[in-house]
Length: 203
Length: 212
Image (cartoon, rainbow over all chains, first blue to last red; front, side, top):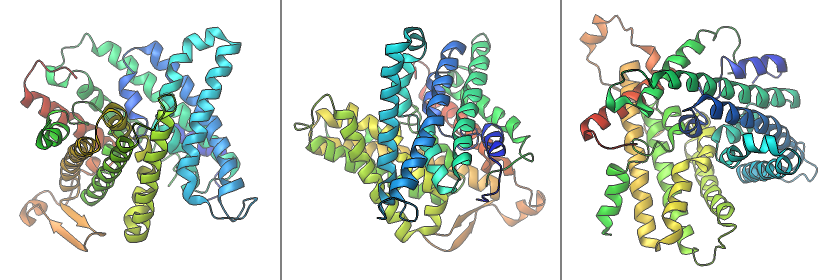
């Protein structure tokens, strides 16, 4: 990964050309399960964007501060622990956010509350942290990548929810109803996003 | 339930990908190469079988309130074993699949079997149930990968398990299409299209009346 890519470009690429869902297939489970109506898709998309942004920043600090021997404060190679640490940070962060929102903003909790526990098992979140390490992002690139991936996922689920709402009145062959046709629509959407491929690229 | 019944249920009649739509992320991501799909299938089967057996063995000790996080830690431990083994013995494949191996942790099949079966059943049954689901995941992956790689490139390429290129499409046909295979199939959109069509075929064969 070239370190000189500007973080805004990383953000742009993560939304459009290297979309976490449409080109890396992460977060498919909740994408398929929660895209039946536009309003719930919108809520989950917002929650995912929020959580990816902050967990990528947190995990960046923990990975380079504690686990990677080259930069860590304790100088021991603990990189083999990264998956366990990442998933615990994500689960802990989600729990914390849920408690804070519940206490200070009941209205927002009503809107996002039910989606938050779902997010822990959304592989897009863990995927962002893992990719950030594999591609050796700098701090700003990692933050841009976290935000961009969240926005990209948000965009994909809102678009497919809009399409699915309309498809409900279409005459779909019965074996294709539900997941089958959603998969094919997503494929067409991924093709459309590939049209932007020349603009920016993230290896 | 008999051992065969348990394996059969996971592998065919309650297939995790086709019927429960679980574990789709990696099913799409690694299937542009047959060999990677095979390695991924074996890795996932190992993780799901190991973690289900361990969760089941510890089921009387695990407190109910913290069971999710403990299951997650057990799963993560098995994933780390697979990750290190791949890095040691199959470096090329590990580089390509690295992130997706890590993501077995959040693969719903693994957590699903631990939570839905292993936590309440004896070790042997949990192990067989997990193996069945692992096999069910593996064959769907192999089917998708076969379609994508063969139609997309005309051959099956082995680099890790062996060094070989298996030409599947006859040379005459390659000449007829001027070597222009539909590259789209090995690109991301192809994955969605092939899985969509596979679900379509399986459900049509199964007959109506089964809701997913």
